Image 1 (tube, rainbow, N blue to C red):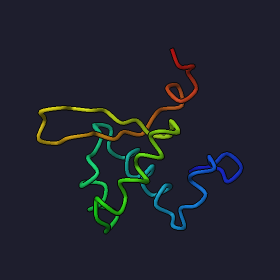
Image 2 (image 1 turned 90 degrees about the horizontal axis):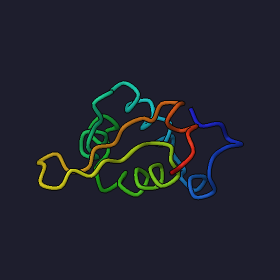
Image 3 (image 1 turned 90 degrees about the vertical axis):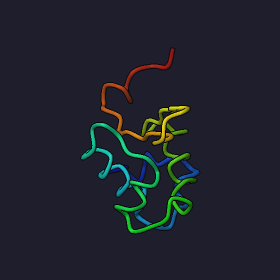
Image 4 (image 1 turned 30 degrees about the vertical axis):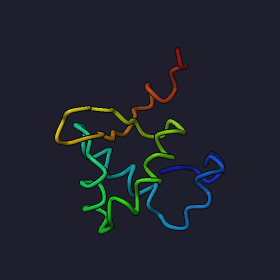
Length: 89
């Protein structure tokens, strides 16, 4: 769960618990999920959560992999503490 004192500014405007729920869902899915799969588990639409996924990925809270040509599209994954803690190259 994201600690309130560590939430990046852009995420504080999200007035739901979607970020925490998204992270929990991704932690239970080691192979990652598409935005549609995440939305289905949240009972939302992919369009409703796409900006939230983008913000979480931009802040390094979740990982986003681009798979061009793949029928699954972008895959989102929970980052491990090791990945989050490592410096960017």
